[in-house]
Image 1 (cartoon, rainbow, N blue to C red):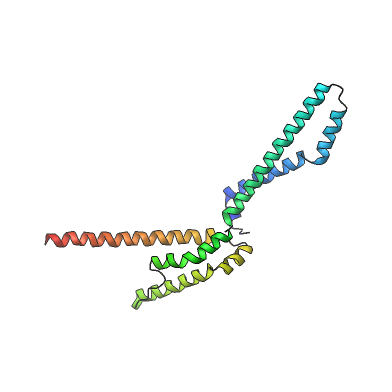
Image 2: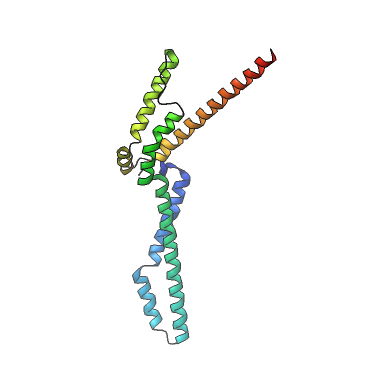
Length: 183
């Protein structure tokens, strides 16, 4: 599992709370505790008291079951937050190259200082494509790598910057058109 996820104080507090709840639940609902309560109920003389005690025990057991399901779901949600499904892996593998190409990041080659930056950027993007291959994703995920944090956030920032850059280019072109008309 990716340890950087567990360095997040909010995540750590949530996991700690779930662990405490699970420990408390496990201690309360052990078979020996239930057996002890059943034995004490059997010693009761009043059928009304026996019925009420059994109803209370059953209600507590159902509540504990619901709590166990809630805790398990919370743990599963946390795992799902950092794990990529096989379907997601296939989708990433087939679409990431098209996304990068759509933003013109993987095929540009230039000259001079800017050309060197573009060549460097192209090499980095090609490395990213290799990193997102299905086999690599599965293997790295088994080792605990958190792709959503490591690649998702930077890719989001990269796309946002490229979109802003395209918007700036259109604004500049549109602004120049207006100036040329007045002359």
